[in-house]
Image (cartoon, rainbow, N blue to C red):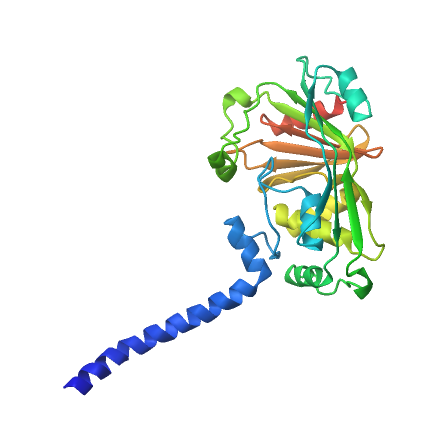
Length: 308
C-alpha cells in the first residue's frame, strides 16, 4: 500500500520537478543573455529585430539620446568629463552670449518664448570589443566587422551648448519618483499651443576610423522605437553625426519626409496620449533642430519654415 502511495506521489512529482528544472535552466540562460536583461529592464515590448544589453534612463520621451545609447554599446562605463547645468536666460542676446551662436526662433509665433541654454556635456570611454561584438550579433549585425585593434581604444563625444525655446502652455515636468517611472503626464487640450524648439551644433566625436559608429546609430534608432524602414529613411535623410544629441520618440505612429527651409527633415507623429503629438527634426549648416509640439502635426512644417 505504501509503495503504491509513493508511486502515486512520484507520478505527479516527477513532471513538476522536470518543469522546474527546465525553468531554472532557461532562467540561467536568459540571465546570461545581454539582450534579455535589457528588455526585462525596459518592461516594454521589444522593437523589431533588436535585442541588446543597454541601460535605459528616462528622457523627454522615456528614451536616452542616441549619443548615450551608442556610448552604452561601446563600454559598460563612460567617464563624464564635462557636465554643465542648464541655465534660463532672459533674452535672445543673453542666449547668444552663453551658447556661442545666435539662436533662430519660430517667427510665426507671436508669443515670447521661455529661453533656456542647455549645458555642454562630454564623455569618454574605452571600447570593450567583446561587449560591442555581442551587441552587434544580438542586433542582427553579425556581418559588421569589429577589428581587434579597436579594443581599448579611447572614444570621446562632446555636446556643445544648445538653446531650448518653449512657446505656449506646456506641461510641467514631473520630477517625482513616480513621475520618472510613469513618464510625463497626459497632454490636455490646454497644452495644444505648446511648441518647443531645440537647436544646437552637432555632437563632436573622436574615434578610430574603423569603429562602426554609423551601424551603432542604426541600432540605437531601432532601440528608440523605429522600425527598420523608418531607420533606413532616417539615415538617408540625415548625416548620423548631426542627430546624436537627440532622444527619439519611443512610439512612432507615422512619419513623413519633408522639406524645411531648403533642408530635408522628418516629421514623426507620436502616440500622443502621453507627451507630445509630433516631433519635426531637420539639420542645416552643421546645426540640428528639433520642433516638438502638442497640437496638430499639420502645423509643424509651417512653424518650422518660420524658424530664422
